Structure formats: C-alpha cells, structure tokens
Image (cartoon, rainbow, N blue to C red; front, side, top):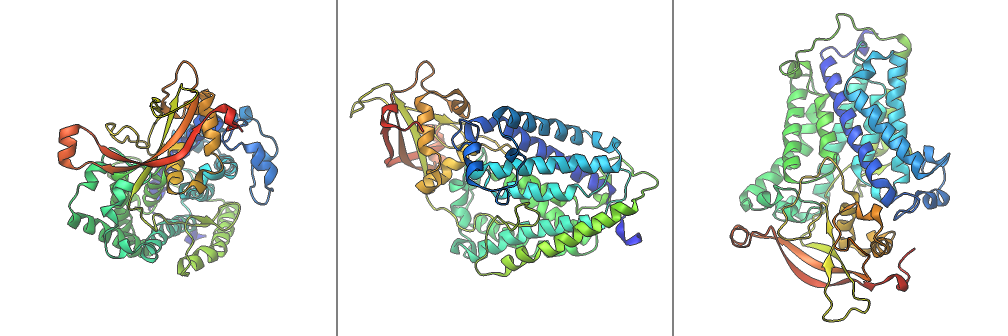
Length: 478
C-alpha cells in the first residue's frame, strides 16, 4: 500500500524510539528504587492489599498472577535492562515480529506497574508513557518503512497533550485569563528546581509574556501539527522550545521529556539530518500483515478518541483521565488552577519520650521538596521523587495523605531503612526517635536583597501543627 509509508521520517522514528526507550529506562529505574517503601509488601500502601480490594477489570496487571517484592524487583530491573538495550539500538537486529514483541512486553509491564502503583502513580506522565508505549509497538524497525498512520497517531497525542492543557487553563483559574498565574507558579509549583527562584524574580511584565506565549503554544500551534512540512515541523519546534522552558523552570517528572519525545516525531528527517549523519536503508519494505495490523490499530485509536475529543469540548473537562483500563487514548492537562500560597509539611522527631515546651525537635530533610531554607532547590527531573511529590499534595489537603501519612510516621518511629532511603537526611541515625510530629509552614522565595544578605533561598513562617507528636505506643504503626 503506497499510502502506508511515510517518506522522510525514518530518522524521526529512530530518534523517537531511542528517546522513548530512555524515558522507559528512567521510569523502570524509578520503580525499582522506590517501590519497596511505597507499595511493597511492607510499604506505605501495600500492593497485596490493593489487589485484594480491586478487580482485573479495574486494574489489569501481571501482578494479579503473583506478587512478591522479589518478583516486582525482578520485573522492574528487567525493564531497565530491556529499555537500555532498545536505547542502544539492539532491538533493531531482531526480526520485525520479535521487535514488536519486545516493545509490547515493555508496555504491558509498565502498565502493570502503574495499575498497582495507586496514588503514587496517579499522574498524567504515567498514562502518557503507557499510551506512547502502546503506539511504539507498531512503529516498526529500521528495515521497515515508517507507518504514516502511527506518526499521525503520535501527533494526535501531542495535540491532545498541548491543546487539552491549554483548554483546562482557560476554563480553570482566572489568573490564566488575566495573565498573572506565573506571578505565583514558579514559587508554588510542586517541586521547584535550581532555576525556579530566578524565574520567580522575573519582572511582572515578563510573567505576562510567559503566560501569553503558553496560550499561543497550547491553543494555536498544535493545530498546525496536521499540516504538511515544513509547517508541522515548525509547530513541533515551537513546542520543543516551550517544553525546554518548562524543563529549565521546574521539576515535572518525565512529563516534559515525553512532550519533547513526541515533538521529535513531527520534525521530519530534514531537521535530523543536520545532526545525525545516518541514512536509511536503500529499500524499506513493510510486510502485508504488518500494514493490516497497523491499519486496524489506527482504527481502534480513532474509535477510542471519541471520549477524549468529547472531553476537550466539555465545559466539565477532566484532566489526566484514562477512559479505558489499558490507557490507550487518554486526556491530559496540567495546572488548571494555581496555588497562590506555598505550604510545606515539615516532619520532626525527638528523643524525648514526653515532649513539652522545651523539647528539642530535629527535622527530617527530603531529597527534593523544600525544607532547609538555605538549601537550593535541586534538579531532579526526569527522575521522579514520588514521596516528595505527594507531600506537596498532602500540604494542600490532608485528604491526599490519608491513605499513607500516619503509616509514614510509623515508619520513621521504627527507623525503617527502606523509608529512610527516600529521604535526604535522617536526624536519628543511631536509634529511632521517641516521638515524631508534623509542623505546617508557609514558604516564600526570598527576594534578591534577602538572598544576598542571608544566603537563604526561602523564608518560612510557622502556621501551626499538622500532626501531633506521636509515638509507637499511640498506635501509629499500621
């Protein structure tokens, strides 16, 4: 079928596949290093409990066949190895059916992890990786012609990612419409990075320009992705610049990385030939069975797109929602509302068994989220610190922490090594604290003069008690 092949996208497909393999590698590494403390058999929200309370239909996962921490670790590290092999191009030495099976195995495995990850995996970059991982199965290998239908499907994902985010902003917080959201966002986002302080110091006029440019990029530019080259490539380049701006200004897990990966598929080989001195094979053939299969998958994507398209047109637009358990065609969006004030939960412990007014409390320090006011916010993304991220949500509302917060305190009271591995500093290295409490603070970025005078990145103000002093005898170990 002559219309099947996309001439001029062989390099674009190669870059997309290698970049997606890199994101997969980070995601599986993230799961392997953090799962025991978060969702392991003795974690904050154990997988076995979750599996017992849900069905196959609600959460399809290979872990319904068997779960143990050792089994999870084996599969997660296996995902790291396979992702690394695909990143190095080893998958392209396989015949096309085997190549597709390897990508399918990665997709099924990561989908299985997401479905048992519970609240820790409930964000848009997880469903986006699952959707892209599914489409990657059908992109073909080096010796097959890039399928135009799958490349269009990738542009449809990028369109929904950007346009959905733009719509939810315009329908959501008023500050997006009056161009003032970035007066607050760089300071109050879930996890600032080393440059967030500097972005926050930009003049108000520059913040207005940032917001206006965001609206153009998310509401106008995505439409151009479906036009012929070089217009589609130009639109993708604009999205790349915008996503890099977001990368420089904050830590958003691998969300921006996946947006960049998506944009690479729309650039075309002419853009990549400048930096990649690689030429496609002289002849690219696509087996008939493969062409039929890709066509069927594309038809399924079209049918399943009804719900995300209807959602974008709805006044009650959902954000980051999957309409099917397999997460094949999802809806996306971010920061429909902006937090004006930053609150942080600060965990503290003491060796005093009967704390009083003169008790000395020592603070636990997290790897990513603000704590010590003199510590510059670190660069974490595309790696994702799941506990740090959920601590931000728990500060917004105790409801976010209800499934796990008390259990976290119990783990600190036991000096649980797996939980402590998620933290940057444990003030009780020799023996567990007698009591742990959580205090509530308001955090603000310092201004330039304060930064010069004190060396602090933040100033903070005590608001009140978030969780009272708790000991093991209070029954917090669950």
